[in-house]
Length: 463
Image 1 (cartoon, one colour):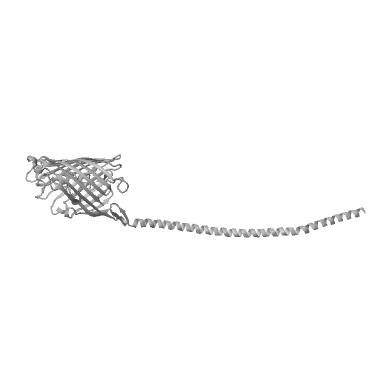
Image 2: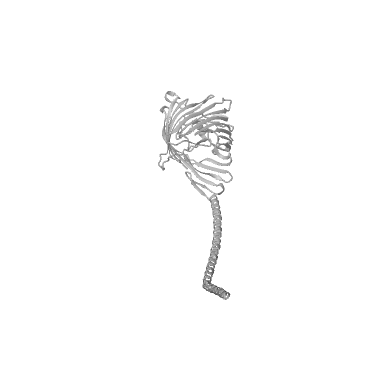
């Protein structure tokens, strides 16, 4: 019984246990299935999302690659465009305005029209006893038109014609070649003598150059010249015949000039020397004479007359300084004449000393290439300024008496006032008192020592 009862209890227990388990499995199975289905759905959604993201990433990579290629193409196109623009700029024609249009083109070509007009007026006061003309006078001192420019290969050109005095005369007519610091010039141009002579008439401080430059016949001549220049030294030499208007003769000449032009702080120094030899044609004569400062009078109160000669030899010294608004300059020149017929050989002398100062702030005298250059007002008219104002004083000496030749002596005392409203325009007033000894015309009581007053004004424009 006991055993039976135990067996029955165990069976009951097992049955009960089975009864408990079986309902639990029956109840949990649907829940697990739902969870699995949900997980499958989430995994499917996740897979779909991953696929979508992969597609988007692939598209983004393709777009990035396309953008990179576009950027590279754009950079290449920009580089090509820049190169093309640079080449086009280099090859294109440009026009700059420097008083007149200056045209620059491909390969080193340039072309610039140039010209100047100087109109002078004034008067001279002469002792009545001399019987010489005096009073008011005027003239177009210079009326030039021409062209200048550069050509490929280092070549340059310049050609100017002067129409003043109802005549047509060639001024400069030259071809040049420049290689580094050296320059070769062929044609008609100023030979290498005197700071005053080589400075353009546009940039001198008085209405006319120093007396000796005209008296000793300095002028443009046809020839060939060579020049070497560095920052502080210039050497010039040349062989010449005569001016274009006198080329039928057989004259020839040789010139040499050296200039030392260092900068000392803000100051520009100039020291120079030159020598000149002229071989004259058989039967030639020379004559040295000079006007009383202004050119519109034809009177000459010192004059050697015609002298038979076989050659001339000249030697000159020159010096100048520019320091801010102040400048000073001085020259001396000796002209020896080898006379024919056993006559003595005279040596004549001329020179000057001058000083000047600008009254306007910031203005200074220009200097370039061993000579004075253009004054450029710091405050020109038209830009709210008054232009530049400069005053100058000069002592000018010329002695044409030596070796038995009595041509007279001139001592000149001069003042000038210059107003430059712009770079390209100028108004000048000039007074000179010329004292003569051994003048060629007798004055009061037969004396050849007297004075002449001269006053001149100039209106000038150039381009």
